View 1 (cartoon, helix red, strand yellow):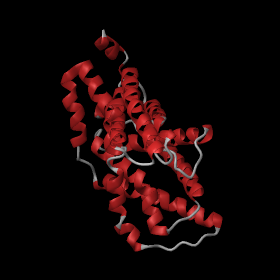
View 2: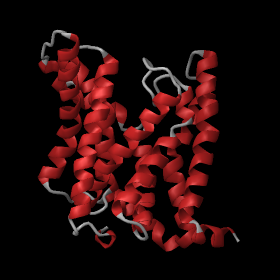
View 3: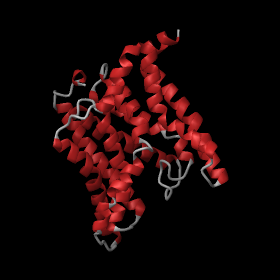
View 4: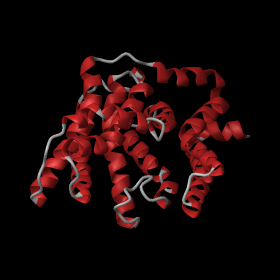
Length: 276
C-alpha cells in the first residue's frame, strides 16, 4: 500500500516525509538551544533534521524503485563542468552581494574600504557554510525533486515548485533567530514571504547550473555554499554597512538575475529533462 501511494504521489510523499523528519528534529533542537542558551548534546542530535531532504529522497526513491537509489547518489559525484560554470558558481554570489554593498553604501553615504584579507578568509566562510544546508539538502531538492518534476512539467513550473517547497521547508528554522531569516529582521508574514520569494528566485539560478552540469548535485552543493557565505565574505571585504539595505538589494538582484535566466530557459530548447 505504501509503495502504491509513493508511486502515485512521489512528490507529495517526498515532501511529507521531508518536512516530517526535518521539523520533528529541528524545532525541538532550536527550542532546547534557546531555553539553555547553549548547544546541549541532546540539541545537537536535533540537527539530524537538516538532512530531511536528503533522507526523504533516498527513502522515497528506495520505496519506489530501489534500483534507482544508486543513480540518485551518483549525482553527488558528477564533477564534469565547464570552467566558465565553475568560476561563475564561485564568483556570481560574491559579485551579487558586492553590488548590494555598493548600493547600500551609496544609499546611506557610508565609507567603503576594500580589505584584501576578506578574500583570503573567504574559504573559511565557505567551509563553515557547507555542513549547514548545502550538504544536508541538495540531494533532495536538486537531486530528487527537480528531476522528478521535470519529467511531467516545464522547467519554469518545476523550478518555482522546488523554490516554494524549499522556502516552506525552513518553517522550523524561522523560530530560531538567524537560522534562516537574519537575526536583525523580525519574523513576521512579510519577512517569511520575502524569504520564500528569494528561494524561488535562487532556484532559477540553481536550475540553470543543474542543466549546465548534467544534473550534478555536487555543483548544487557548491553553489548553495557560496550563496550562504557570500554575505559574510563581502562583509569581510568591504566592512559593515546597513544590513537590511544589503539584504533587500541582494533579493532584488537575485530576482532580476532569475528573470533573465528564466527567459533563457524558456527560449532555449536544449533544456530538456532527458539531458539530466
